[in-house]
Image (tube, rainbow, N blue to C red; front, side, top):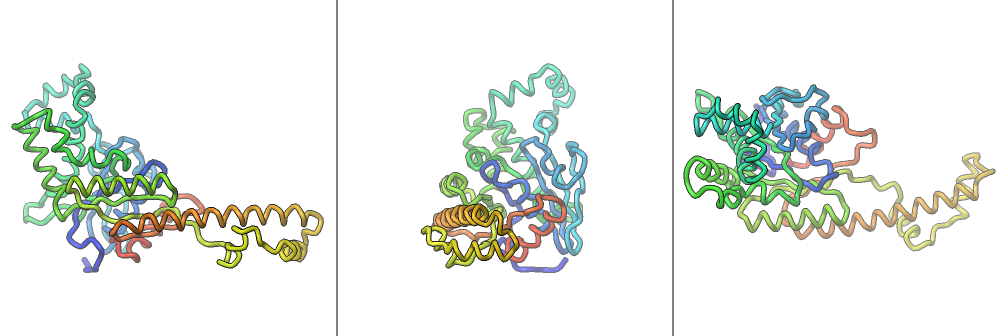
Length: 331
């Protein structure tokens, strides 16, 4: 396994969050591939029950077990786990209370749903606990089973509450297995081996949620990782043209000449108007993106920029994003 310097040397749990629609699951999958590159073994964990990982890697829906889903560049393996809340709770009851048979009976009676509904903090302890256990797991020879774990976590608005499980279980248990388990989880979450990465678009609401989420995590003592700006659009106009378009100073006659030179004489006026309107929209969008990027600069965290995949997200695109993350030092 070749050594390489990254921004996150020593980190073993990468939690990925972001506002809905920012491509959080895609970025988590790409990060897992990037971390596994060069002969490493990485576990990608999904906690929301959407089977988004299976769709990205073009595999059947994942069962409640760790399953290999991809080979990383230069060797290395990505395993995936879609955590089923009910199965995880039954596993939890068996592990801490030796209630395997009773747990299955509880499931049939619907008590599992009842418990996780009235005590959502317990649900979060179980989900985060599964990921933290994978981080701590060792082989018989003492080496780690996984070099890194990537968690595709809940959206930004819920991330601090989801990870700060000690606060959530305070009203449930003052002592005993639940409390001890929560304490163990929090030791992992607040350790230097864990960081929370934020995925955002250069739009007002995702950026604001990123800023608020990072502030909340800092206050709770959970380490903040990088900011991953996803779906960046390339500049299609030179700076001078962007400035002219934003101020309504485009040379329409020059555009018309270009349209006619392309053999579109008949509709030249209409096409020129459409091109000018498109340029103005692009200039406005560029100004917005630059303003939001400036807002992100208040966060003293590494920032990574991923391009928009114009052909959509497929396996090839996922590997391209992984390579981009590696080139920028994220993995």
